[in-house]
Amino acid sequence: MMMSMYSAVSGLRSQQTKLNVIGNNIANINTVGYKSQKVGFSDLLSQNIGSASAGSGNRGGTNAKQIGLGTQVSSIEMVMKPGSTQYTGSDTDVALGGEGLFVVQGGGSGKYQYTRAGNFGVDTVGNLVVNGLKVCGYDYNPTTKKYGTDVSALNLFANGKYTLASTTTTKASLQGNLDNSKSVAGNPAIVTNSLTVYDSLGASHDVTLTFTNTPGSNNWTATASPASVSITGGGAITFDANGKMTSTTTLGLSMTLTNGATTPLPVNVDMSGIYGYASSTGTSTIKLADIDGYAAGTLQNFAIGADGVITGSYSNGQKQPLGMLAVATFGNTAGLEKIGDNLYVPSVNSGAISYQQPGTGQASKLTTGALEMSNVDLANEFSEMMITQRAYQANSKIITTSDTLMETLINMSR
Image (cartoon, rainbow, N blue to C red; front, side):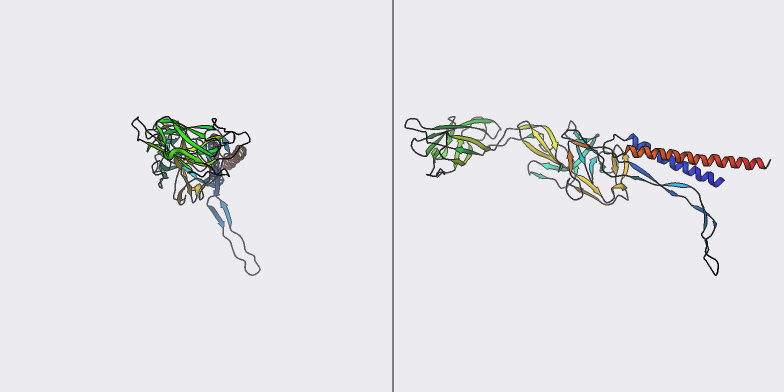
């Protein structure tokens, strides 16, 4: 009877542990990226009251006679399957749908910690953060236009990324058609187009190009205004009988500046996309196809792509990479240890660690504008809770039954 009571006590303890795990799972039903846990049991030592015997002669063999001494918690495993993806619409929210964890710093246990939570933000000094921890990845160098090779904390303002330096305009390209079919003596065809160019200080200057036809021919002349802009080579433009340009396809502009910027400002205008065809309306159309150069700008916001690249949007309309997230994968992800705050750290059983760009190797791509929710199955937790409750009641019943038998035995001795 004492053995049955001790077995039942071990059962109570084990079921209480399982109930604790169930309670924690349910408490984290809305925790971003939370991974549920499950409890495994194993029996304790068994008392042998009879050994096994082999058969001999006319007698068969017998099995051992053993009485178990209770149960114990053999494992508390993490269920690493992905949780459901919840759309948030925020450009800074990302979710991992498969293997891997985000790398963070500042959790107070080792150099790096790891999390599945992707509700990122930026602090006042430019650190990419999640729950107050620095998010790590590969830094971007605006000067070399390359990413770093080592994982480190990402700062979106460092290395001149908060202010995007201006660039000087050096080239532009025009497309369109110059039709001289309606021009007559004394009334040449005239077409204008405007460009905005930027000097070495990032200051903008408006330039107007005027194309004037020599009536009765496919010859045109390009002029520029204001007076500070000159055209090299005279600006002569000619077409053959098939409407193809026979003169140089590059129009050289030179602008004299007086604002302290580098002068003159040379701009090469590619005109290979301009033709001299007759149109049904007899009108000419020239449009700007491309131009480089822009004013300085400051970082306004940022977004994270499915490949982990963080792209900044600037006040001058330009965009630039700011960094790239790193994803850590492990040989045995379930072997990681929890340390609170949605964080995990490696253990001796988590296996080798590898840092990768999202979508490469074993690391999954990111779902942008969404978060991975808890993978707790509420229906399953309720079912397990009821089973655990009944198991706890059954073990307690063993104790009360054994106590009744002991009481009967004691009363017999009176």
